[in-house]
Image (tube, rainbow, N blue to C red; front, side, top):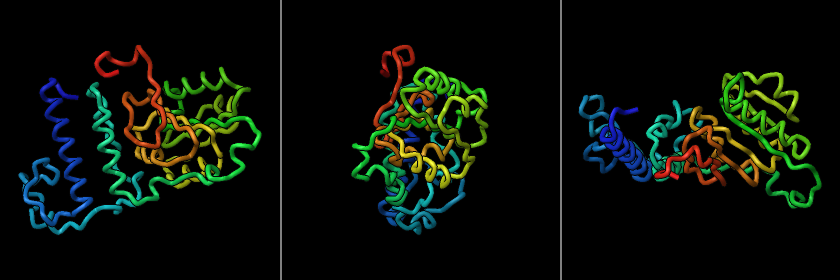
Length: 249
């Protein structure tokens, strides 16, 4: 978080330049790289040379597992500004860097009997902050209590947070997968959901990477993340009048 609007604007310019630099590397590699305006490689500190950069091959499709990045672009949304254009640029960058499997689709969505099959609608919630006494989890519990009987509810906790006993009591299924991204994908597909709600998407790389995949016909990101993600497989971003500044709504 920067101390002035000028510093914030400068940082955002640098951030977007780095995204564009990586996009160039994805398409062309470092073959024609002449300088480093975005300070992506820290040339000024002599930690890397132009010759080393120019030896980088095209990076398109080379990032095999997005969930293994150090962290999502977490601090960008603390600027409190209209971030959809930046989030879209980041999303498009990862779409270039990752193979097509990043946009995996749950098999049940292709089944012909999916629409005619008579059963109660299934809603899933996923988050890295859904366990313990985190406000994200308390909100999810309130939603489930209010709508219990109208839908089947499933809760998936990513990371280190432990689900409270109440999650197991009020939901139709409550699961903890830790930091196992493959287990998370397999579980979410097996639930054959009609709607998947992400309580946040910027706190944990596994949750962010899951957002690119299609686990349900309707996928929603709610205000556990202060800004929308720019990821095309999120169909809705839910906010509220009291949660948005008049300039950013």
